[in-house]
Image (cartoon, rainbow, N blue to C red; front, side, top):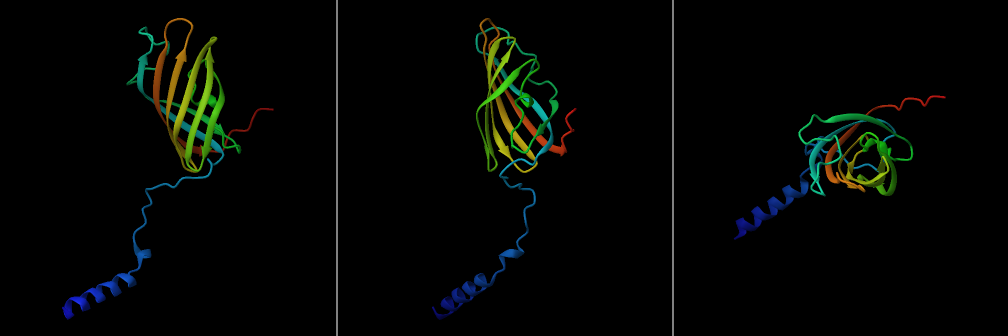
Length: 166
């Protein structure tokens, strides 16, 4: 019994003296940021799902399995992503309920295309110089072609924003 107690005491002393700072750092894990670093970001968007919500052909050029689309957007000091970054060609979007803080983003946009209504929601995470999001688009057309579109978007800061033309 005495030997068992001595071994337990020795093990306790050794664990108390262990240096946790010698543990290898995991540099692959990026930490959340309070805000995106202002600058130009390159976005890559891949169509994950597209389905008709009115049993007609969806009124979009987006196709599942197509090559990912790339675009660029500027993020200013206000920590806001331009709604055009997530819009399809010909859409005009304005932010509605949006949240972007401490590594989490939930962005909602009201959009229109040729007088028809769309809603876009981007939900994801960000670090100081990148973000990933799942972007869902829902349409509410007066005619046919309503659809739900789901895209995976990744973005990485690539430099400073180009100066605006005078």
